[in-house]
Amino acid sequence: MTKVAWNTKELTVGQLAERSGVAVSALHFYEAKGLITSRRTAGNQRRYSRDSLRRVAFIRLAQRIGIPLKTIKDALDELPGERTPTRADWARLSAAWRGELDDRILQLQRLRDDLTDCIGCGCLSLDLCPVANPHDRLGDEGPGARRIDTRLSPPPGACCNTAGDRP
Image (cartoon, rainbow, N blue to C red):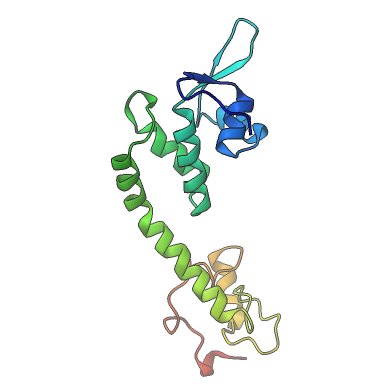
């Protein structure tokens, strides 16, 4: 790894990529999406301020815990003057994402628990489906796997999958 002097105020895209562990193409993508910014030199080369390292780390960590880029961008846009997130910013933003993460954890637990017997679609394509969908009631709610997505389906035991509803 190329050593960048600690007092270097700006980084090339290659230096930022090497130091952050993020591919150059990803940095270009982040910039195109407005997540990070650079200035152009007279030779039209990108230069990133050193605090871009923290912004990229913030983006990567948020992505790693499952936060969509749009949500990350909205969070970064809330910061005054496009500044780099501080520890207090991270605490506030991560607390706001807690509910979304809890919901995703619940969805994954339901998927894990039902994986052997059900794909969550309610389509009745499996002959031993434990969450039968008589008369394709779930089709009226919209496309996709309705039973696994906790934002769309009621918790277990609250739906119409009683023995009397099975075909």
